[in-house]
Image (cartoon, rainbow, N blue to C red; front, top):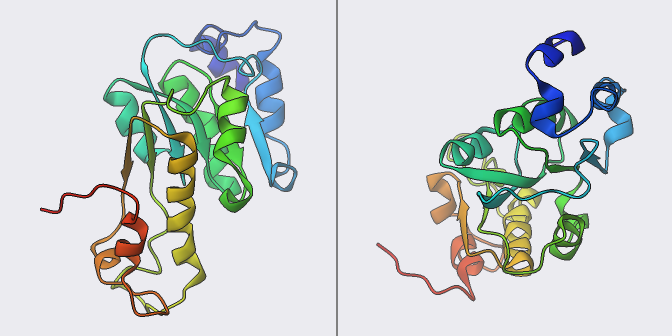
Length: 205
């Protein structure tokens, strides 16, 4: 999408930027993707977010934004997103701020190297301030489609989601994954899901 097209859509007003600041976004987005690895992408003017009364959410393993879009349509505003894949992350940055008419902090970073304290500090928030943490940790290690193996390194990312939930202390959290998660085991023979739910009050249906 060309810069001129964004001007017609009123992007400066949507993001709360001046017309002079807008080109900085697209200069950044069009840079080689390797420069973005392990970076936080912030739309100019988003360093100090102005909260507008909407419920706020943080999206972990945000991909290109499908889960975020659902929450935006439900009346939430996404204030931060974390995604390690560069292409997915840039797709997210290219679309979500305009769809929700508000900027956000977007991390292109290994989630294991990110703390809830860092996310909250950058947002000017405290533990308990966020309404929802949402996310879709990688499902390949749990899915019945493909070769499941005990000790798949990707399984550990589920516990990174839990760690950040505990550090951010949202009012609620929602995690999406495949049915195979319910039967996947850890090397010690215990169920991954049971280990994940330790410390939470759970009512099974």
